[in-house]
Image (cartoon, rainbow, N blue to C red; front, side):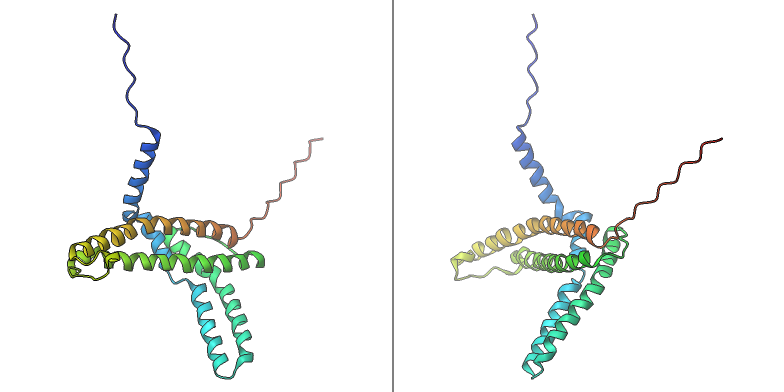
Length: 214
């Protein structure tokens, strides 16, 4: 009598999940979709720039004896940002993702988009710039970092410890971990933009039934 065949060995689900996560992390920085999200994040966070410019103007007014002009400057900056930001975000969403978001929108949703869009744009732009600078500096450490360093916390005092710490701890970690975070944050920003700066569709009137023949 032939013994029953043993079932094929299967990989435990936690191990498969860990391997899938590692594959996704290793592939994310090289995907075209990731580059679109990074470009979207880097594309001039208009709201944050305008508000920062308004703070500089308010500081200038306050330090040059024109304190009454500070509040009108802030209100003008908020109004200008609220008017320009939806159109600017529609433009960069169409440019990077090919989506056409049509307006106009309501004042309440526009104000919510001003707040969330400004904060998320500033955050994702900062993370993307930090990713590029930190990765470039630390991944290039094997080319120029062979020198002693007095601080043991950064791999010193031996040159090998310095290069290894910066290359592995700073370069590879930032290069592979920050892009998924930027992709996730810009994905949330896109979802909010679809809700806040797209005109609410109006229901189409239903056609009247045809009169019954006499």
